[in-house]
Image (cartoon, rainbow, N blue to C red):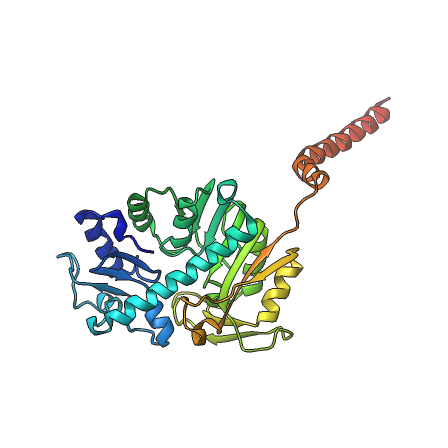
Length: 327
């Protein structure tokens, strides 16, 4: 996301640099200025984890350039041209996801939106820019400062909720429901992918977009493969410690169908998107529910009232029976 047009203040750039070096703005593609760029596009395209996620020429005094955490994030300036190029390709990929949702689901101004595992908030920010009635990001990491900064720069009102997905309850406590739900590169890090998909399906009223690393199995095969234990989340205990997972495209699609999504669109790569060798290792599906009929909508909206009436009828029968016994 190109933020240079917003003429960021010196205070905003300093805050962004501190957050980037702390790992709180690094994974998603943002260009704050010609001297501050973030994103994992280079690491993805080169399949070179550890190459760096942040380019900056101006480290604030509060940042120690020799600390291991900062060194992990900063790139070698020699790779800057490719680093910038691949992050622009990653940005184009993200924009293609947004375009698919808007094209197939409809006017964002009539929708509520949530991103589960939102990281720094790229998607909630974009949907807030597009005028979504509500645009929310959930994450286990506290990105409050990041959201505050980016909302301030963009003039948006994306809402961040520091709430994790919990495998022990199969969901996010108090998450609520939204018209459109996104999950971008989250499923790959979960030990319970089917339970998580079920939660996403329950949370999405109209549409669900899932992007994840998939296996090379055919579209007919339904498999789950675990690749590592505690690689990224060292404190997760069994059975939630398997944090690199590949689901087969067939199982992912079939899961969406079994949850009642009847219209499924597969994301296609764009000429200006990520390299095919990387893109083709993933699948992105936009799953859309069938439109409710007026009768179905009425039944859903009146279900609580009908349930209460049934309870009242049962209580009345019980009372009549007790009166007869007294007489």
